[in-house]
Length: 137
Image (cartoon, rainbow, N blue to C red; front, side, top):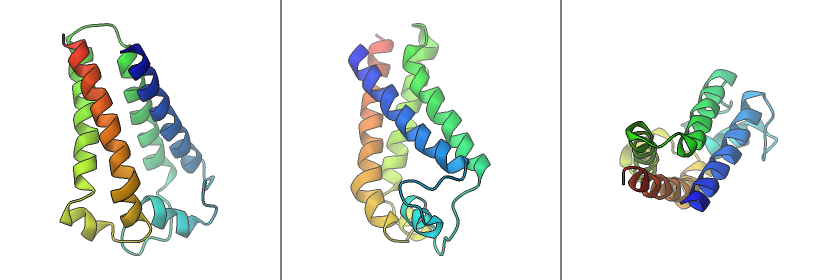
């Protein structure tokens, strides 16, 4: 389980670091803000990336999730890991919902959401569900 926790935490730290770059106004991996916004947010007509505060909130949430597998054993750890898994699974399912397709229709986000972002969320969801099951015994 330690190896799974390392991979899950490391993956979330990488995603958090990317969101931190965006919070600081550094557009990566696409340097054009409008194109980056269409690629990672995808809401209809978007031309600007979300502001520093929303990006920073995501950073904090991802870092808490990355740290959770390393909390002391106990009920809180197991429930927290289960909650993190649930959030990732809901995000993954949402990618394929008609509502999400209406709210975020811009390309290439729409294509990437279904082919890359949602599968990554599924992987994190499974990893955290396995960690939760192990923590809850």
